[in-house]
Image (cartoon, rainbow, N blue to C red; front, side, top):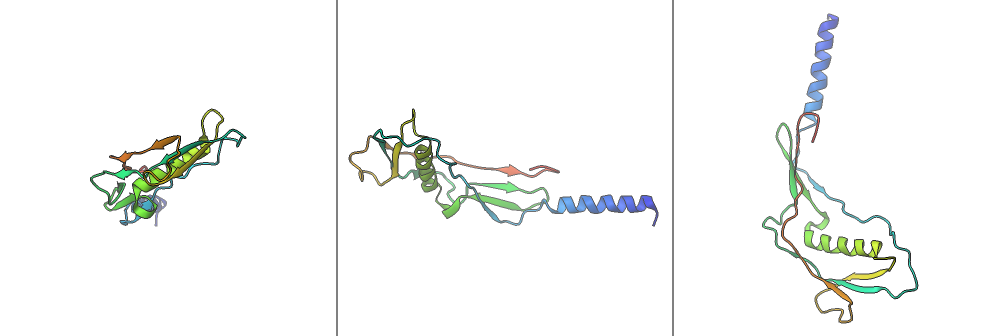
Length: 142
């Protein structure tokens, strides 16, 4: 074979290999939304008692968080571990408040059903109305 033919063949194989990797398999990817290490230092001041009631999931499509469409067809679905988005968001908010605190003051945060902790300083409730993650593959990018 001529060197120019080898070069063309090599380029064609490389392009085919790159494009073949862009096809989705219908797999589900879970999103990791865990909080980083605590930033607040524990002090002797009595912590603020915060209760977060489980959030209500009011999204129209509760089956998944989002999708990624691939260049040559196929779809990857995004979801959260356990498939319970509202519970995951409730727990992540609790984790965030525990690790961050406020004005160098530690917060005693827990997730509990409505009315379970009558002596709470703050009660947080909520609804998830929209939450999505979408991506579309293109040549050399997603």
